[in-house]
Image (tube, rainbow, N blue to C red):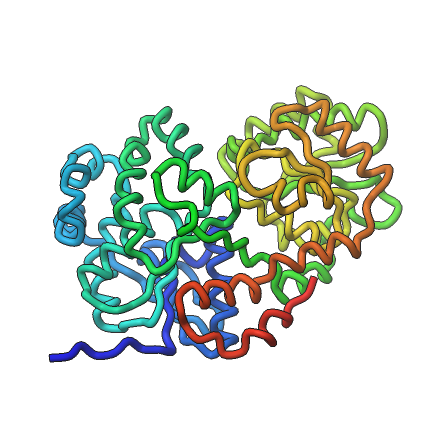
Length: 417
């Protein structure tokens, strides 16, 4: 008996939740763009993270967590050739419990909804997507996407005794070729994935993140409630991102202290995270606490970016660097560390913003001073941001999945920076 055909108008996105970091934001941008092209879009996520209402036009499909043993048994059924890795107790004792515990629910969803395509993001969600399709035995086409540098995750994960990363490369090497498309969000991410796993680099496509949307440009037009950004105040440098170690905000604070010793200037770091106390203490130690604010997520970053004097990114690593594109879309000059993997690609090797070595506060301070003294033409920066639209990325996703793009020409030009 023939299986029912897939629902050609339905696409599912496997994501972490409705809110959170850059991965969630980019998946939502993709989902909205797919809806604009006439697709029905299901957002699949852990039921415990499905907080809040889904944006208009999108359907939230919470997936229930099942006991860990269920995920373990199903993964072995889906990929018996990976028994040598999947049977290791340490892998399931410490790791990826959430993604594997979603396998029964994800399998059921695919068998019942039969979407034409499934887009997933991050390593263990990608593996779950591939295994769930095998279990459901449906012809849904899968696009897996890596959002971070796998070699860096492997090195840092093993150092932290997060043993799942030790087993990721062999699982990826065997599973990812079963997907219709493998994507890295930058050339650096794609090259790291190939180098670390042995996958054929030619099979890994670079699709830059879908950062620029009409919503981003509308947010840039909204003035935030921040008196430092009023006319006549000293210039403000903005940074944005989670307050975590890889963002290396201590280097930014030291660079800012050097710059503040030379001229009036202020620093706003938008974001929240476990490093807040350490950063506030360092600002006090450096004597610049009065000119530094950490307001958390006080509103759309674009509103701040459109009124600041410069944007600074001090990360030791990035998969892509969404905030750099957001700054460019606002016409805001950028200074960034030349860290793996995305900043140099976005900034054209320095053509669209200054690049400095990671961890070098003196170089960062110098580049910020030069940028404030001779800012680039905002029109050039906005034009560069136009290379990173949600419309452009979504067209590429559909092409790689082999699915119809209802209005590719119109969609690709619908959003301009």
